Image (cartoon, rainbow, N blue to C red; front, side, top):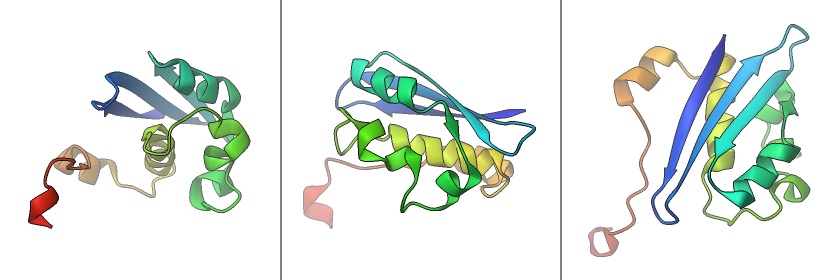
Length: 113
């Protein structure tokens, strides 16, 4: 089985499809399909993560500066890796994900805070 999260980065017109699959050894395979050269670098360097990488932000390969390399700070691809891994691990319910469909960042409501 596998879990997939789609990232639509409207600010840079890029899309990333993040799929995480549980391996028999308990580690997780990460596959990222993207039309962004910076995220492709990230994808090429993040093929395998551990459960600790998925559950602990500090020290996680998902946010390792050497792996994140050229990603901009606002890039949501690393968040999608966390989400896909949490779904795959059963820590984020598939039913809830289907119900809410997605999370949202609203960028144009400066005066409504």
